Length: 185
Length: 148
Image 1 (cartoon, rainbow over the protein chains, first blue to last red):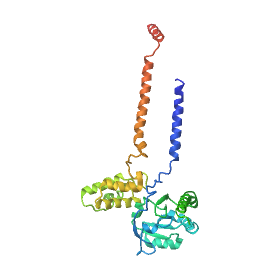
Image 2: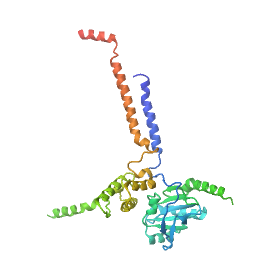
Image 3: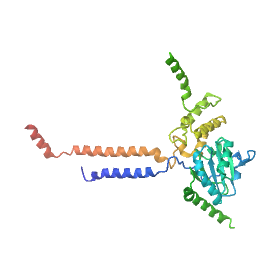
């Protein structure tokens, strides 16, 4: 046993510490990186929840920086998220578009009457095809889009006050300052 | 007699209990086997370790329907995999594509194997060198000891 080989276990130990430190800090494996960041909102042509005779398209979402929120009445977490969406709609001057995902239209309407409606418009995605185009795999999910409809950020799961302040608001602030720089008013 | 009837009843239920089965019509058998291969290869985005074939999650049902729809529309397997990859990223493929983000995953084991081989070769060579390196004094003493 020479002196150098005494350090081998220490080296192995340090390598293990580094590997585990990195491994345990990796994000929740459920949080898939979105492939859609910086891409335009996918094309769609779907009815509006308020008036099913009215057809909405991706152009219906442009003009302002906005949130797009995927929700459903079967989604338990959506009820938890709902008060925060109400607050955002009321206090943040940010339109929220809803995507009613794989849901029953009547139930969805009743839900909005019961809990109140934070959405400017709700898109009815009855077969979940728009959700597939957005890479959605559950609800709730929330996207930040800019005034041109380009997807800027995706949040999987409930938007709480804390999450809005720490992750969504910074993205929105950057977009707003960019917008202000382009069109000074 | 009763138990035989019961057993027969349960055996009849067996085919119904084999996971998610969608009754999708296909125009030919080749298309059906392509469908089966695709839903084996694609991973359910919701479930971490189940493919589309084995999952009852809503998103898995929707994606199976989408695969079926694309097959009927005449899309190739590569087009369908691209479609899924564009939306759900590397996660959706059980065999992720080789990119800058995944090359460590693909070649990491090979690098580890080579490193382990190099270390093993070093240890063996050093051991062999030491074996030839027995001092002469020891050999003489050994002979003497053996004579006694």
